[in-house]
Amino acid sequence: MTMSDWSKVERPIPMPTPLTQHFWDGAKAGKIIFQHCQACDNWQHPPSPVCTNCIGVDLKFEEAAQTGTIYSFTVGFHGGDRRFAAAIPYASIVVEMDGSKVLMAGNLLDVPYTEAHVGRRVKVVFEPLTDDITLPQFKLAD
Ligand SMILES: [Zn+2]
Image (cartoon, rainbow, N blue to C red; front, side, top):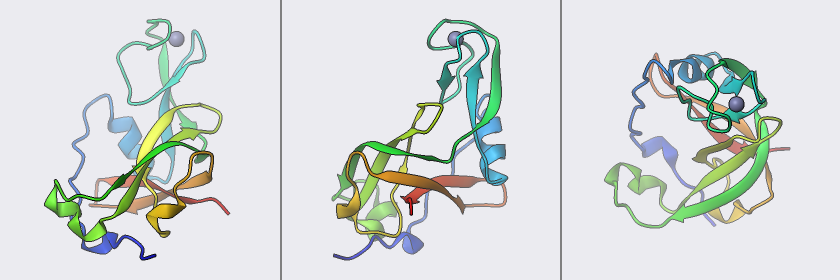
């Protein structure tokens, strides 16, 4: 089973907004930053002007765990976006992050796509895309 070759993929570059800037600044510094509701303890991502649980507005950006468990995944077999053609087939995973329980999406790197299974443990790795944008991705945890 061959591994996806991400080295030939020209990834779309995320465009931070005032709300998402904290997340991208954190990723550049090697941290995962999510929004944390101070009223009800809900963690959420992507960030929102209000808590998605209690509609409160006392939200802070706080560092969260960089490990989690695969919650769901899909395998890309088709190159609808030709920029991703070199990586086909590849696993896109949704990870339930430890502690925060936030669901965060990314690609599973450095293993064949067949290694993506619900329940597997993964950890974040940081992939610099530009001087400003670093993309959090995932590898299998040790
Ligand atoms: Zn809340």
